[in-house]
Each structure stands twice: as C-alpha cells, then as structure tokens.
Length: 324
Image (cartoon, rainbow, N blue to C red; front, side, top):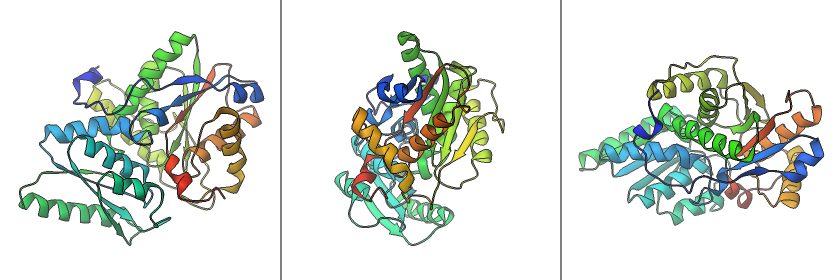
C-alpha cells in the first residue's frame, strides 16, 4: 500500500478534530454513540470538505494553478470552504453556483463574499452545463496567462476521497487511545465522496465496521460510491476495489435536496440543547435524525460496538433557512 503521506497534501485544518462520547444520546438509546467533530476543523465554519481540499488544492499547487473553479448549490458548503481554502493559499476562487434554493445574501453566500470569491449564480439544474461553462471560462483565463484547477461538485473525486481515508485512520487512533471499539460509522451523503472515503478507510483501518451513508439527495450512490472507492484505492495502491452492497445507504431526502424536514427538527433541537452541538437542516440534521430513528428501531446497529456519527459541518445553513 502506498503511504497517504506520499500524496501531495497541504495542511488546511487543525487535526485531529475532537472525538468523544455523546453522553445524553448514549443514555437515551442505551448504546455507546460517539461523534467525530469535523465541524471543528478550524477553517471557516468547518466541515468535511477541508479534508478533501487538502489533497485537491495541493495537487493544484503542484500543477502551478493560481485559480480554482468549483460549483454546487447556491448555499454550497463545499463552495464556501473552497473559497476559504483558496484564499489561504493565495489562489483566486471562482464559484459558478446553481440558482436554486436560498439565493438571497444569506448563509454561505455571505461567506463566499467574505472570502473574496467571484460568485455567479447560473440558472440551470444541470451540473453538466455548469461544468462546461467552467471549462470555457478556465480556457479564457488560461489564454490570458493563468492556470486553472476545476473541482467538481463536492470535491467527490478519488483524490478528494483520500481525505476521508485519512480521517478514518485519525479517529481509529483516537478510539484505540480511548479503549473504544467502533462497529458502525454514519455520515451524510450529498455527493458520495465522504462515504467512499469512510468505506475505504474502514476496510483498511477498521475491518468489520459497517458504513452507512444517509442520502440527502437522489443521486445514484450505489454506483457512485463503489466507483470512487476503486479510484481512491488505485491512488493508494492498496488492492481494494469498490463493491456494490458492502455499505448501506439510507434515504432521508424528504421533500427534496436542501429542503428541511420538519420531522427532523426535534432531533436537531435535542442535540443543541443537550450537547451544545449545531446541526444544519440540509446535511447533518437529516443524517443525525435518520441515525436516531435507526437507533430507536433497535435492530439496525447490530452488536455492541460503538456507533460513530461523523459531523460534516454545514452550520451556515442555519442562518439561511428555517428548520421547517
């Protein structure tokens, strides 16, 4: 296996992020429930994308890029964190975002501006159209002497997934130090890259642990995740391949992507009031609520080993939309 440290990486977060037991939640469900606080990674309002961007922007720097393009919804956490990380590295960020959802100057759109990104809202539902526009604009800039890096939605490409392989290695060490055996890992799934990284990381460092992604949109994750696992495994030369069916995908989309589910609000409120932890209504709130409902059912999380909830950030959404 190739060492992860052999891949280009620039440090953008403060690691390790906290890993600890949720006392009130564990008591309620009679089960050890831990949280991995990647919302506290130290960049902007935190989140999972920073781990991906450490590898993606390192490669961009190695390629001599001075401009980074990316996309997402109007309130994209990935886009805002790309802008923050690019600013730290002295790169220009160009964000071509879907004109969908909350497009007023709220939430992440305020942060995009603070980070100095060039933002344009595109009236389309197609990322293929936006990707084509990114390529066109990047070509224009390169004719003017710049060099551009294009990062797809969510940073969900094999190199980005390596960030969460590394993340699993990190909390495996933390769990061992605390005497905790991990049996289950749960996170939100919006573009598939984090779930893929967690799955490959679990295979390498936590064999036997079950990975569950909570889908917050209707992307074909059963195809996307194995493809990303295979690509990341090839980069790491670890001999693994993506296999459909060796992870679980649970849906909690509700009325649609980026539309809060009213039935999730009590779970978001309880974690805030009992543990002082903020969840957003688009990603982490939906994932956490789904996990709690599975804990209530009792049979989903087999065995007695701990359940780990990976907090992937997204707090800016709380300032952009109602919980529902």
